[in-house]
Length: 352
Image 1: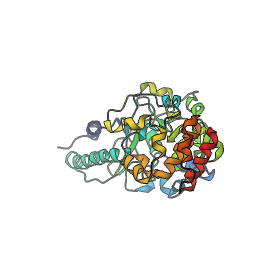
Image 2: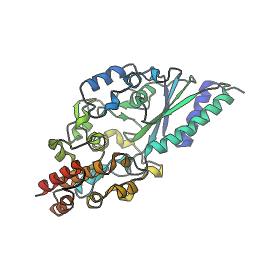
Image 3: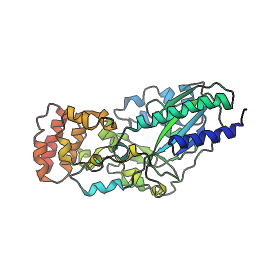
Image 4: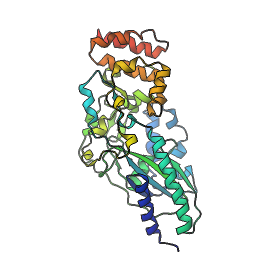
């Protein structure tokens, strides 16, 4: 027996919650016409830095309806990874490294994609049984030219705040995004509107002044970009501003007042590993390639490699003010990687 489309959507939402997602909303692939011009302005200004992939396939990234023209609906899903602590507490311990909350355990790409595929299989099966429709789907988690944040706002999951990330009245700033593109035409949700008002807490929280203006970031100054995407030495005028960040940065997210409504993640794979919640810089700086790969197996940190990671740790040591850490930096002043050796010499110079 066929069921009404609204009833089918309710079943889809219930299944998404059962799978483990925190929220589900729907829009059309063509509901974000503003993205193409915004992306072009960002790339033309050079704000993307070394992220050349942002300039590639811009015709898809700026127009998701061109990515898969047969798609008629985009199911946007949010997955909560909220911490049960304030990630800024680590700044009081300069001998420790600050790892972005999302990277303190398993790689979210793997966790979320499994859930998306499970929900996608359910969707195909139920559409056939409940709607008598043979449909197709494609799932994406931050690994394809899909403007997830813009689609998330168009679907009603949240709005792009002044820090350019999505903010939800229910989840705050702590959630991942995933999407299912489908040929099934589903009822859409109302787009979310901006609720930032006059608040600029996220802008003022940025240690490197990466925000050119509200809603506009120069990624070349963003600590997340500098510690993850940027290859080679970081400009010396920015190194001191990195503090003890060694992978990513949560400063602007953590400052958002809407986090008062956020909940701690229920998925244990997003709970902080004890050795990554407040890791000792001394233990990390001595990692060779083999030890690095072993320690960060299954972690998003693994993708930046030992050299870039140890570079970050050395900058943190240089910023620690702890002269007793100097010998650990001194030991790498002749490292086989030129960038690591440069960071080690800088750290020793700072501590002296």
